Image (cartoon, rainbow, N blue to C red):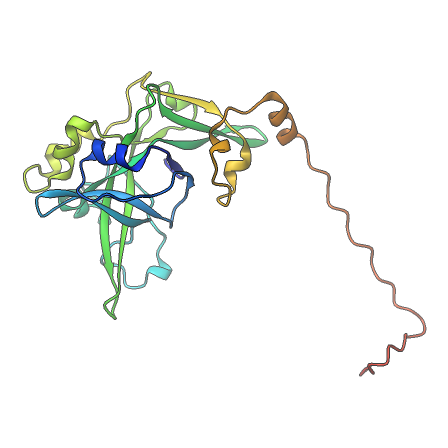
Length: 256
């Protein structure tokens, strides 16, 4: 799956890679989480455009989004049939620029976080699906879900699912639903090949969404790991107050 990712490349560099018309200026993000607005590249009126959408898709047929769990990922194996995605895969395919993502490996007592990125350091384009939810009063919310696929043997040591990345020479094929139908793009929905991505363990500071700084990407040191794995002292219970035999008079009066 993909539950956190990063965007660290300069805006102009991403604009050149993804080819959208707009010239947005946005700061690097080191801990992007679901429900937050994220950059999305779509094909609209014959050109690629930069849009901000919420990470978390709500199907158009949902009556009350408050009672519906946001869909942050879409399994590649079921996008053609699942009601939440079968329309989006035909006409609302998009890309999410990223420089890597985080995954948590089960290491016994606690999960350890890892930063995963292309071995050559280049940005990636996550395959994503977009949907617009319209409320009864005319309100609209654009949301996206990242498509995931089975992991290659090396990445499977961290997690059995990975986000699908679309190669730059396949951007047009993925984005253009007018020419390339859903069946035509299904072969693109696969995980990175073995050896394409690298990773390293990082600090558990990434667990808190409020932490959003470049230090999150650094490999963890032995000292940091030891400190994070050290059991935290149990909280001491507050001493119980014992009622006095003679109530104190604080001058405020009492009903008892």
